[in-house]
Amino acid sequence: MKKFWKTLLSALIIAISFGAFSTANQVDARVKFTRNTDFYKNEPENAKPSVLSTITTINKDGTMIYDADTVKQKDVIAAAAAHWNKAVGINLIMSYQEAHVAKADADVVIEPADLPAGIGGVTGYDGYVYETWQNIIKIANTTLDAASSQKGFVQAVSTTSHEMGHALGLNHDPGALMGTSGAAELANGILPAIPDYNVNAVGAILKDLDQLYPGSKPITIPNMTDGSAYRDAGTTEEILPTDRVAQLTLGVDRVATRNFNGGMVEIIGNENVYQVGRGEVGTTSSLNLINTKQPIVTGYMSAGSQRYYQIKVGNQFYIVWGGYVIVTR
Image (tube, rainbow, N blue to C red; front, side, top):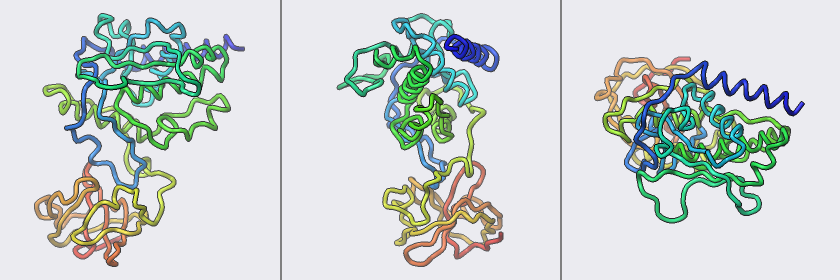
């Protein structure tokens, strides 16, 4: 039985690697700082957002190439890469052998390590790190050794996928990949799916790849989502101090509660327009929104008893005051 499930998984990895995606070219990447970039600015506030790191190891061609030569359990590493590649819909993570580049050109080195009890893996360095360094992922020997069983294999793949998420540019969040909410599935030997918002975060980096590498061609992944797929099931009607929209100042007002009743607004006058995380970004006149109808993503009531609406215009999410709009359902 053990051979059977590993054979099936190996077949799946091969099918994903060779049947669905294109190959990569020589790269120029490794550690890259993201501090001066503006990724994920269009994510609606009613999402459970990915937490972006200040570093990514995505290269200028929009891939992440690894060297796992010292890892005996290469099927674990290949399965973790396939897990990510299936989630985003492109051949994002691959070995340097698959990428047909030199070993020294790998963006990240994956290696086994003796780590403290309870630590399945770590990514990056203690202390200073510089651009152009190879990133490093260490997977605990105890995690890799346990991969001889089915549940242990799934746990090792999950741990490696998590560390690959860090190398791609994600920090911890409450989800099944970068957090602990997938623990129940793992306990039953089930590999949790990579959440949509993690896929979208990586997709946002790839979409704006030229911010990291001037001249690079932006990449649009096929599996990016929007709308209700973003929303955290735990989103409350009351806006909490930790919600990003709570930091948004609307003149002298702030939003206090929200609803997801949907509908449309017709914008009939000139008013300020806001975005979560960015503040005031223009007016309905400057953004050519007057006399247009737009879908409502989120409805708000402010502390000052004013209505506001988050609307979606193309791929942008704006917040407008209810005083110059007509709401239809």
